[in-house]
Length: 343
Image (cartoon, rainbow, N blue to C red):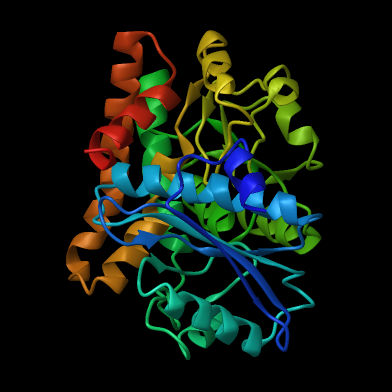
C-alpha cells in the first residue's frame, strides 16, 4: 500500500499518510499531513461514498496539498492536511465512528487538526471532540460556510473589477453550480448585490428555494456550462474546469467556492488563452479555514472579518502579477504560497 501511495500522481512529498480503522464503529479513514512548516496541519474531514480505496487516497492527497497552499496564501500560522472517511454520509454515520476518528487524531499528537467538510457537520466534530482536542468548528458557531461564502463574494468583486473594470454586479449574470451551505450563502450575497442568477444543483429543494428567494433561473446540472453568463461560480465538487467544459463555457470570469476546480494544472493556461479570468480556488475559498483557525488558536475574532475580506486584495495581486508575467493566475497563486511555506 505504501508503494501505491508514493506512486500516486497526487503524492507531493507528503509528510505522513495514516490509514485508520476501527471495526466496531466501522470507521475507515485516511489522514494525510502534507506540510507542517508553518504550523500544525489543518483541514476538514470529508465523508464520501468513494467507489474504491484508491479513489479515497487520491482525494485525500489532493485535498491535503491544497490546504497547505490555501493556508499559506491566507497568511495563517498552520500547515496543510486533510482527512477522508469512506462511507455514505446520509446512511452510515454514527457518533461512535467520529469518536473513533478522534482517537486516531489523538494518536497523531496534534500534527493534524480537523474540522467539518463535505459530508460532515459541527455535531460530528463535537463527537470527535469527545476523544481529542485536535478538532475545530464546534457547536452552533462552528459552521465556517458563511465565511467561505464571504471570501468568495469579495473575491468575485475583485475579479469583476479586474476583468470588467466595474465595481457593481448590477446587470451581470452569474451561473452558480452547487447550492450547499457555501453556494447558497454566496448566491444570496450575489443576489443582494444585483446579480442575475442561473443555478443548478442535484437537490431539487435547494434549486426551488433559490428560484423562490432569488428569482433564479434553474438549469440542469450539466447545462450550467452552456448558459449565457458573465461569471461562472463552481461551488460543488472539483475538476469542473476541464477540456469539455472549457470548450462550452461562455463566462469570462470563474470565481467559486469548490476545491480543485482545475481538472489538471494545464487548464489554468487554457483559461488564460481563452481570456477567462480564473480566481484560484484555494485563494478565493479560504474564508472558512480562516474562521476555523481563529477559533482553534483562540485569536480575537474582531479581526476575522477583515482577514477574510483581504482575500479580495490577495486576488487583485494575483491577477496583476499574472498579467504582468503572462502566466496563468493558478501559477502565480502557487508561487505566492510556495514563497511562504517552503522557507
